[in-house]
Image 1 (cartoon, rainbow, N blue to C red):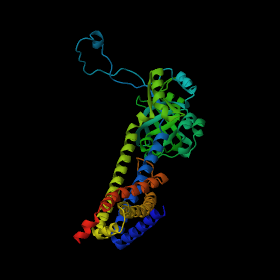
Image 2: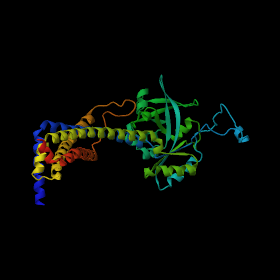
Image 3: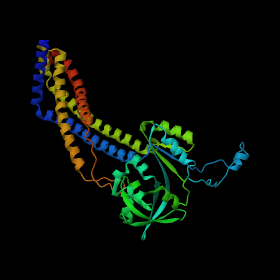
Image 4: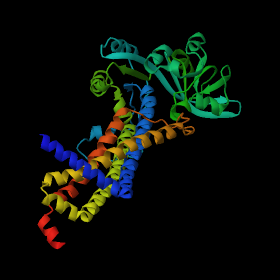
Length: 422
């Protein structure tokens, strides 16, 4: 055991001499690892930060399950019913005259609220409308809701920029407007806006509050009003409901529960994964690209270490031969060059963590205008410890692999052949 420790100390001493004898090569190799890990930390921090930010605002504004009447134009024609065996061609078939109303919606809501798996249920009426304020007219969407139930599902109180949710309950003909929509119409709290439905019905409502979800597709078009008020505007009875939003206690069961509810109620029940499939695919693709780029940077750094160690071995062939002639085993020679590789990887990796943290901090402070697409004034950056651990482990592993082949070559050097050649 003592002899092995002495052998290791000697290998370490020789490795240190090799590293300091060619300081330029050592620094270049370390900088390759530093740059690779630094860019990995910065990239992964930025991309996961963006993903986490967009996921948070998307998921907090999306129900786990959305029940609605899926009106489709495709249906069997009378000709196909009369002659099912024949080849029938029907052109310009008009859609069936159906409304978006959920029949028996009140009973559905009652049943859903008794389900132990469900955290909250919010019935809703959704309609396209025109917002008229002076000469300005914008197309948008109004949602008739039970505002406290909606708040339970989506935490609307935290998203209010002006006014209170309770003001909508106190003022029957009130409306809470999205921040982007209010900005485009130049509307402030207390102003009155004329709502016009596609059927031509109009109503003047008072703006009692302004909310901001953070997503332009919502803030630029949506407003909330009392459900009974929207029923009045659309000239519908009190049973008229077009959508039911559901939040589950366990979001990951949404697919199973949605399938069950669709079978039970016959209406379309869409889970959050299906509704946000495009977004989730984008997250996966961004993560793949980030890891691929970072892996490539570290592999390039590994090739640099491989080349430098190869050159060192070539230049130190005589020294290696002498060491083996003096009794050094192949394992001892291999350990000399593996130590060099690991030292370069470890020091370069630690410096890379510092560079990565510095870059991430600078990116996090950089101003960014999300415009009408997303409410963002700076880049969101993730500083999670696991990415720093991944970076250093990945960097040291890459350099260890890069150093193994040259060290193996050095271990196989035949001292007799080398010394005879000299």
